[in-house]
Length: 180
Length: 178
Image (cartoon, rainbow over all chains, first blue to last red; front, side, top):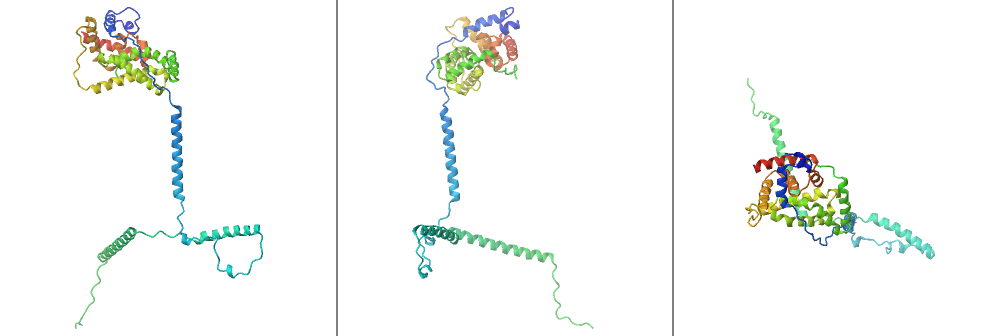
């Protein structure tokens, strides 16, 4: 067999290969027109970009939600809230009449007082602890009971172990008579 | 590995024109896709013919090129269109066999066909029974009329691999032909 002819049809033609080419060539591809439909071949440059933006917005919203839930202050009972603006101190009524103060000065005093009072109120008013539910109370009681039981068992085991380790003290001699 | 399947370096001067064509097609000039079709249809036809019944091949060639057009934007290396579309063809042939299951294949109706085509069908069946690497190379060489260098360029194989496949494939074919 002429290897070169088989490789690139160069050199002396190989009769066997030529015969196969002749016979098998009848099966060769016959070109026919291809109908190219309207197929979108372009990458949509906006799709991925929009997706990335939407994902970023979603992440930011999620982060804000988590941050807000972590930083949320417990609600203060309205009954315990002191409105520093309207608070009337018991001493105020007994005080002597104050000197006349002009509007600007009054506003400054109020603002300063308000800020100071607010700070005092904030420090004074502590948030009330959330009352336990019945379920939580029952669970706490059960846990306490189990803990007491465990301590009792442990104590008994400790006593038993102690007795095993330490020999029993001889019983006191009773009714001992002198011999001799 | 039968016959060696070394891959040739992709970027060769002959393929840069393909890259330009692909770029133009991706930019909207779909008519240029016909050029790729005419250039690589024999390759796809040969790859399919080595693996599938003849009656199924013609339609499958068109399907594969339309599929390749839809997925053209996923082609990472524009100079590798040939190997890429050949791989699509091989996968489609595998899918075909999976779907068709173990049906008894009635060989192509030989009645009414001339003797040469009958003989061609018989030889093709023998080639299809050869190992994968040999049959594809032999079909591309003997049916589609490609030379060894052309087969190497279009499939992405190294010339050395193609040469070995041709030599060993032909030797086995001759043994089976008797």
